[in-house]
Length: 208
Image 1 (cartoon, rainbow, N blue to C red):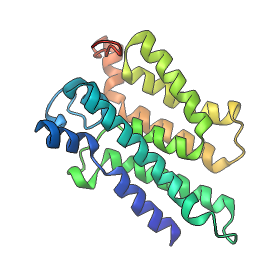
Image 2 (image 1 turned 120 degrees about the vertical axis):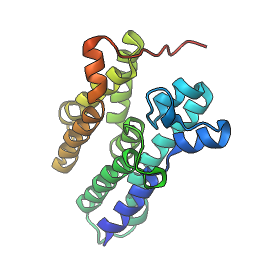
Image 3 (image 1 turned 180 degrees about the vertical axis):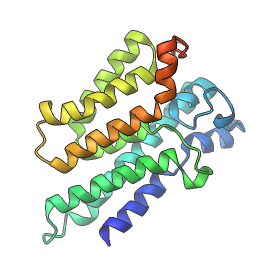
Image 4 (image 1 turned 30 degrees about the vertical axis):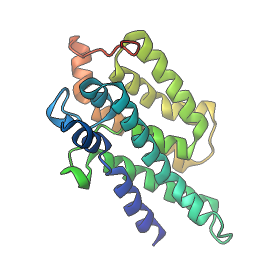
């Protein structure tokens, strides 16, 4: 029953379409009709600007982290529940949170690519791995100014960080890292095509 309850809660949290709600409530704009037509933080930055972009980015990270923190908060006080059981529930919740962001029930199942929410779930599961991935993302982004390329590199590095840097002994977490990496890269398949063709749009982090 725990698996079902936390999966549903995680999906609903992930389904909060922050980019859509912020755009419509504050600017009367549906970001899915502009820019890359993606309901994520990157397109919000492009279409609405830095302030709403930061708000959306923060919400998307928080909802992913909350989805994976909740099982720990609720179940950790029960001494009869093994830690491995909690990790399994966390991982399942993480998957559903990302799925909820990509296919949000509150926004006609048209969401974002799940990068910020993926960062949130990684923070909830393994904060140190999240830090390493963020650093790699920022290095690539600052050097090349492609958000998508930074996200792809960070996603590819996640399983390697878990196995060789963190040396996490949970096979569940390692398998999840591979799955999440695949999901993020799959979500960026069109971006990969544009990167290869030299058609991907750049974003200047320091532009006013």
